[in-house]
Image (cartoon, rainbow, N blue to C red):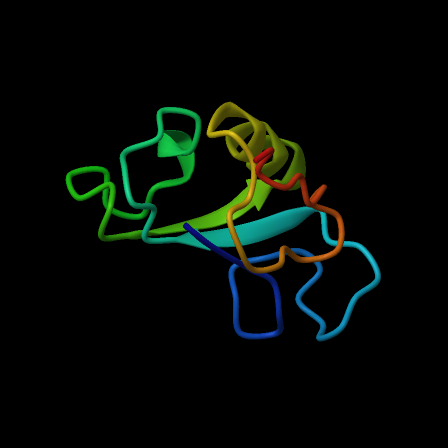
Length: 85
């Protein structure tokens, strides 16, 4: 999944380069994730949609549930838990 926060994303606050975000945007997860579905823009296409204003604690929970981050970065406010190899 892609996790973003910037002035053009569905996030809070919507200013660029914030120290901490409380809500972030998720895009195009590789599998349907039940924890994200309440924020799905198009619930009929869970891997081909955007999820706006998702609380950062939900993002952290999803990351943990799937074994940690494989690569990349997350916006400030999301805990960057890495995959345990």
